[in-house]
Length: 536
Image 1 (tube, rainbow, N blue to C red):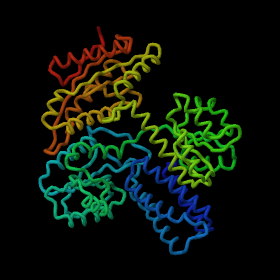
Image 2: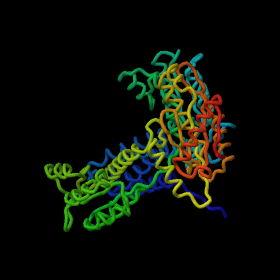
Image 3: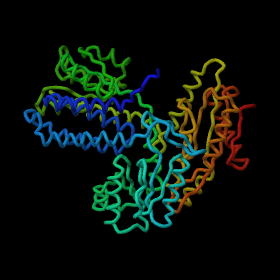
Image 4: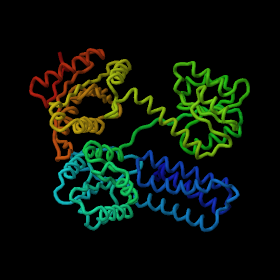
């Protein structure tokens, strides 16, 4: 008998429904808090899955629930308010059910880049609403098709297609009807596809028209000069999942009751936590647990939270680590002093669990983004030059006996001409297009880095030279066929590559230099080719 697997999204939705049923049955404020925490957890999970349409519905319900938090004596809610929330709970569950596709129904066109199926399968269709000959829309459609999406063109007044809703809808206003007709069409699309992400391409940079589009149901407006450079990136981001290490929080709290409440709230949001009652052990715990954030009680035996924080800020590795104080202290002067001495935020007890989870996640996300920004390239999200060199050095140092590794240096051909002819935003799009191809074609264990400008570095462990050459050659052919959308349509580009193997060049410096020399040889031979230096 096969085991039935329950996905985290299903678990969170079931927990939400169970807590709502409990609240309707007994109506206590504590049960309403549990319902709100479960709802917040579901919203954050939808955000991690990059399901903006469903996230918007969940956040609407969450805002309605949080508005009922003010007065505990107001519970149980009056029947009319409870009924309104019930309708929103049912609408959220229905939207999740209708937007889900059964496993195995997703189709990727032959020859397209395959994005691995995540735990929750997204639709791959994208509707493009445009009138007449629209070169921008046509260029975007070509790109979408190459990456495995199924674009479907609609006129502004065409009936909506039957069947499953799309992942996204792109509205291109060239030759479009008057704005009232456009807004009516957007509103109808929003009602028909509540879980889809709606884009309006070529929006004015002015508050009133953008607000009008958002009120009608548009999620994202894109200025015309930014369309080619950003639309595909945003759509790919909807289907790509990123492996993310679990958030870790160190709780410094001597009250068992408070620590239990914090642990329960964080666990509900899939955040790992470790509790210490004695701040004197902090310097022993930190190196092994490596938290992303510290929740620090303000008043504890031996040391108070401010004293413990001042000690931590003396250690170089902990100077930027977020620290959030927990206390019943209501003196504003004391709170300001605590923040001035090294804390990041002050939460007053008793702590609202939804606020606690929101503060923790926000602080950790910003902290991790700060750390990540020192290692990644801002345009592509790949390792930057320094991080690529360090990563390659580490891969070589940990290479097993008789292990092998191949390094490729890649350079986009005639890239200056692309910038000079089409502008730097289109040049950036070409660089991103190659980055997406590399991420889609290579393994999680491979190194992919932007070495500088239009140059990339790859390291493929456990790949024989002939296999590594075949992989890079296939990517070269795919890139040559990839259309890069711009306001006048689409362009194509190529790259040259040099390949070297650890077997013949046994150090990070030697193998990088050999791959770079092979790249120069590929350019001398006429570009748009791969040259191997794997044999001396």
